[in-house]
Length: 189
Image (cartoon, rainbow, N blue to C red):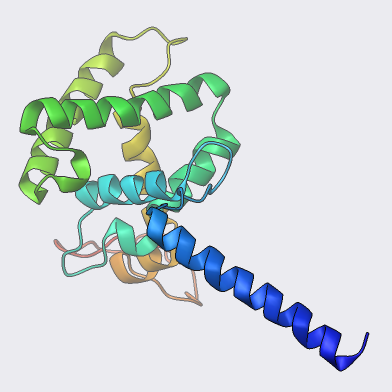
């Protein structure tokens, strides 16, 4: 191929991408959320991050969002939960959104921090009652799953282990009995 043919081909390709790009912008097309795995997309992971952040908010230590707990939950549900529990979890996300909309006339993502806390506190009481009355073969309440995954994801993350818990990379000798002083953080190592 000579240089003239190559330049013509490049001009056609670039012209097509410019026209295609402007046409895309003019029609108002919005890209769909990218899939994270077979069960969750990016928007659902952001949603789970907000749920986790409400359970473990940022204070003088990092919150659950900083530990990327939403992505951890999506991975654990996909890889470790049975198909039945996966469905309970996914339907639970929908139920949480529905309950928030009924109670506050707004979705969870648009609700205030106080409204989110109020809703999740109510769901926590509900899941405790559910756990007491359920049969062993029945699945756990969806909020219990969310709460357990939030705690597991946060405290096993680098952020949770090093910033929220006491962490010593090389702890030294074993001491079986260490005095606890009120207010001390738990040990990660």
